[in-house]
Structure formats: C-alpha cells, structure tokens
Image: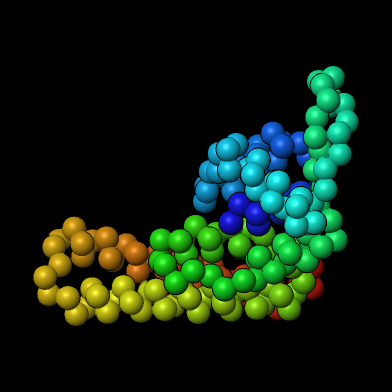
Length: 174
C-alpha cells in the first residue's frame, strides 16, 4: 500500500522525502498513517525498481535535499497497484477501498469502471457474509449484533457510493 501512496503523490509533482509523507498524510490520513520509517525504505525500493528517480538540489530552506519524481514505468506501476486485486480480509478492504477510490482520478474511464466494479463486488461479498452471520448465528451477544448491523450499513453505504461513482464515470470521460 505504501508504494501506491508514494507513486500517487509523486505523480502530481516532484517532492522531498518529508513532503512525500506530508502529502500522503494530508490526502490519505483518514485511511492510513504511515510513518517516516515506512516511507524511506519504500522510496528506496521504488527507486531500485526504476519506478521513481531522485536528484539532489537545494531546498527552499537552503539545505541540500533529495527530490523524488515518478518515471514512466512508475506511472504504469501506479495503475497496476490501483487495479490489483483487493484483499479478502474485510478489515484491510475497508481502508484499501478508500485509498483506491481516492486514486481513481488517475485512471482512464474504462480503468475506473473496472476498479469500481471490483470494489462493489467485494463490498457485496463482505455485506452478504455479515448478513449471514447476523441472521444465522444464534449465540451472538447484543454487542456483536450491534456491530454486525453497523458493518452491514457501512457496506450498504459503500456500495451506494460506488454505484454513484459508476454513474458519474459513465457520464464523464475525465
């Protein structure tokens, strides 16, 4: 996930390592909050793979800093990361789907359609599982039932959101 976040923020402009983290937190902080200790090794991996490049230059503060930018290969990798199969784990799905939806503007219309379809199908699977547990498990406590009911509502809301995004995507070619 960290690689997707880095490539996304670098797809917009060249940034220092500190600015990469700052931009990730400002855009994706509601879904994930990576540490500086996670960003630095990920930048190194991405550079080694040829997805980003770095250069040294003087920063606005007058210090020699490393600036990172995404390569053509990195732009393709970003698309692949956005469109890759999402986790079957419901907890990971919740945060990952939010991040992927936030990155949808990077994709072409047909790619967004593919992404939305994948996310909606997975949300429907998770909703169905939660409904089955709620309806069929007799030993659930009051609190477990409340949490399952809330989870089902969250999936319904996500499905409705995605359906609206699908309609908007069908109307627009942005």
